[in-house]
Amino acid sequence: MGGIPVDAVEALARLRALGLSAADAQTLCNHLEDAERRGKHTHGFARVPWLEAQALDPSARPVCLGTQDGVERWDGAGALGYLVLAAVCDRIVSTRPDGPRLVVAGRCFPTGVLGYWVRQLAGAGYVAVLTATSPRRLPHPDGGPPLTGTNPLAIGVPSSSGDPVVVDVSMGAVTHGDVLTGRAQAADLVPFGGEQAHKAFALAVGLELLVGALAGPESGAVLLAVRPEHDPVPAFRALAAGLRLPGDA
Amino acid sequence: MGGIPVDAVEALARLRALGLSAADAQTLCNHLEDAERRGKHTHGFARVPWLEAQALDPSARPVCLGTQDGVERWDGAGALGYLVLAAVCDRIVSTRPDGPRLVVAGRCFPTGVLGYWVRQLAGAGYVAVLTATSPRRLPHPDGGPPLTGTNPLAIGVPSSSGDPVVVDVSMGAVTHGDVLTGRAQAADLVPFGGEQAHKAFALAVGLELLVGALAGPESGAVLLAVRPEHDPVPAFRALAAGLRLPGDA
Image 1 (cartoon, rainbow over the protein chains, first blue to last red):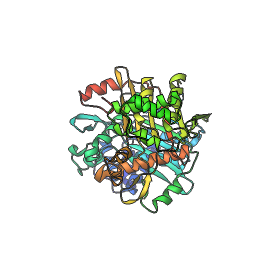
Image 2 (cartoon, chains in turn brown, red; image 1 turned 180 degrees about the vertical axis):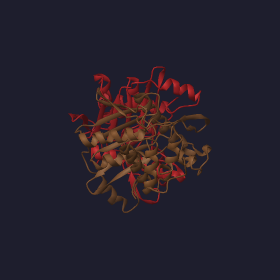
Image 3 (cartoon, chains in turn cyan, green; image 1 turned 90 degrees about the vertical axis):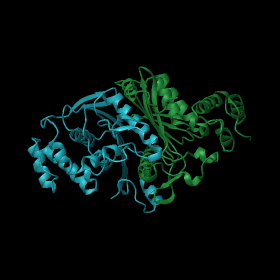
Image 4 (tube, rainbow over the protein chains, first blue to last red; image 1 turned 60 degrees about the vertical axis):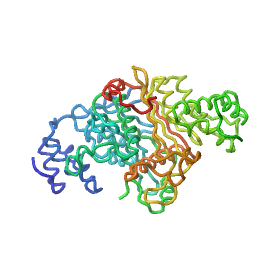
């Protein structure tokens, strides 16, 4: 186990050394490299030493349990959450459903940058909403034990004019990655919003219980992908008149 | 047009005087009364003089356009958004779908307290996620014109142990109702979160474009209702050990 890889070549080699297949290591490396490119360094190559310290079964494969009552269910089955969401997105992009697809993935952790996944789906023409839970790290604004994960919510909306708008908001004031890399203390990992932290906490609770009710007690993910009927992004970008929008470079 | 009604009897009479049917006036009055009971006074009887000042067609009825490609579409057709969401929820509660129901309602404004609607659905055994747009009032944190509505997100999760958890978070630092009643200035109506207002702004943008992409250019609503597979609320309440959770009295 070493420091943070200096580039994608080193990252890929070290992911392969964990026993991951060439395809899985490449999927994971692409994700980390995209995070680096977007300046989300705590979700980038810094995750390699973190992954090296986890107990993981490199041969585990996510399992699609099929569609029951209109919900497509997946079980991470020991695979990294990144690989679960990659398989979920690949299935949507390759099967191109006309109707909405609601996906519930149990045992799906860690899931990386959720914006990465909805951006893929937006690129394939789908509006996508994705949330995922993670170990409990956010306490109630009044104190007490950690009650929820940082529980990001990501929304991707495609656009006829090119770039989609991609929103990806964690409910934490800092990221767990900031804590891992020493940029923040664990005590800083509280709901964002300062005096209005009760709002971010409420969102974290709602998403925690939404995922829990659909995916079960372990960390999971819930995704909705649906084809748009309208194309609001060009007019919205025009109204914003050059102000930076979420997800823009 | 008078001041704020002193009670539900006066509120109901004044709503009837707008020309609303007895049933519609009662539906609306029940909503306002519930908001009063929960301390959300700016969403309560204070809305009666506001409604009296709007141009509204009291005979307008929301129209269910049917289900196309798995999406149930509604058009407010000039009816108050409250009455659209009441009809949407009534249809779910009366038809009790086994599979997930994704509802897109165009021209659906004003929608009141979104938590009210997901609480009804949670009471009928559904996990529900609801968002709705409203006139643009929130600017970018860097300034400029208003770009998004306050765009609340509500999540209701039923529980075998009784009370559901009901989350309802507006992305504004104050409500438009606060501005209407003089408790806040229009300039205070910015994304919540202070130094981290870019997070609430991003959520408002994502929800704005999600609704816009599905429901069209006028204010609309998007609802997902789905039966839970698990019951996470009792264990969550136990972990919270008496701390007040979102939506609790």
